[in-house]
Length: 205
Image (tube, rainbow, N blue to C red; front, side):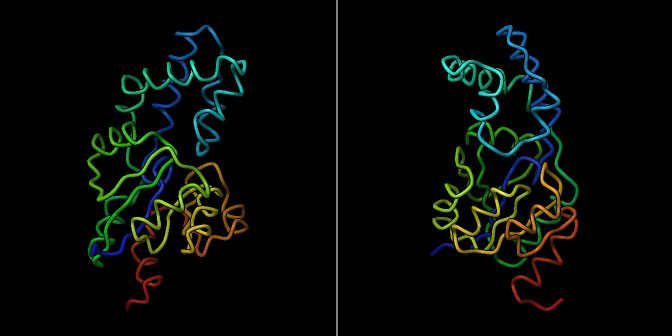
């Protein structure tokens, strides 16, 4: 039987993907001629790509624009991405307590894997293309004991999976919004996660 796991969101939880995503949106504008305000778009990362594309493209062009964006993504989005502060120590803490590291994200799995490889983050399981409560099935399948994310929808995912949600205020949602969404704990960033994990697992400080 697999060891229990700690689940993480990806964008703005483990990695700062905003520069690369902004570059990809600008490339999409160049490829399609449809203006996308890249800075505005990256200010609300979290929901599935279709949601953002639908703000800029006519309904009958959304699917094609998503396909174009995803084709451009490996070229423009991966290289500028950096791990967020505290990530390496956070994942090391998970493994030090005998847990597996799993990533459950709204991003397509193959694109998420490119990011993880680029920043050198090894994970035990990866599930992509799921959002909010849709993440619960993957969290349950992976045996996640809690879920860490930066968005109110991540707290909904944790609630749907019946596990505590740990929020990091490194994304588009404020600490107050994350607390109101049901976070069991709100951290400024992942640098505080190892100590929080010890408390959440009931281990000695």
